[in-house]
Length: 211
Image (cartoon, rainbow, N blue to C red; front, top):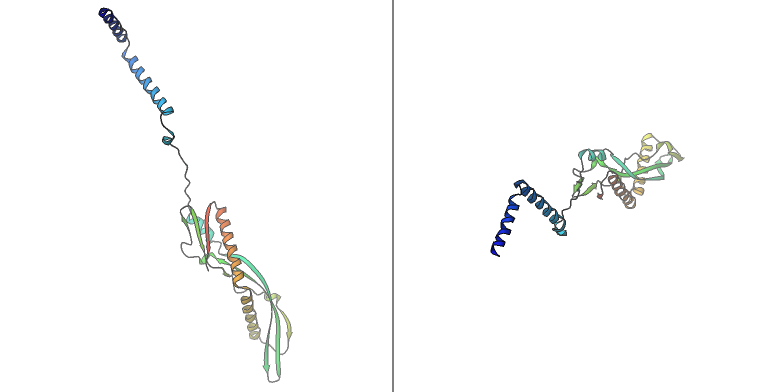
C-alpha cells in the first residue's frame, strides 16, 4: 500500500516538474488579477465607494465691480410735482404781488460713485452689496421752460424771480422727498441690484441699502 502511495507522489512530482516556470508565473499572475477583480466587485461595501463632485468656485473680479460702479447715478423713483408759489412786496405806493406756477420732476436713487470701499464683496458663496443711501438726484429739477406767471402786479427784478424759484424748489423738495417715497426707492434699489447680480451669474445675493 505504501509502495502504491509512493508511486502516486512520484508521478505527481514528475507531472508538476514538467510544467515550465513561465507557465507557473502566468498562472499566479492571472490568478492574482482574478482575485483582485472579484474583491473590487464584491468586496468593498457602500461606505467604501469613492465619489467625485465638481465644485465651482464663486469669484467676483475687479472688472465686474468696476462695471457696476460705472453705472454712477441710478434712478429708482421719479415723482412729478406742480406748485403755485406767490410773493408780495409792500411799497410806498401799494403792494405788488407775483404768483407763478412751477413744474418739476424729482428723481430719487443712488450714486454708486459714493459707495464706500468694499461695498460689494464675497462672503462664502454669497455676493453681499451695501448700497449707498437713496437720495435726491440733482437739485435742478424744476422745468423753467414750463414755468407760468399766473398773476403779476408791480415791478419784479430777476433777483425777485430767483428767490421765488428757490422757494418753489424748497416746497417741492419737502413735499416729495419724504419717508414713504425714499422707502419705495430703496425697495426698488434692492430689487434692481438683486436682478443685476443674478443676471451676472451669481446665485446667492444679499443686498442692503444705506439709511
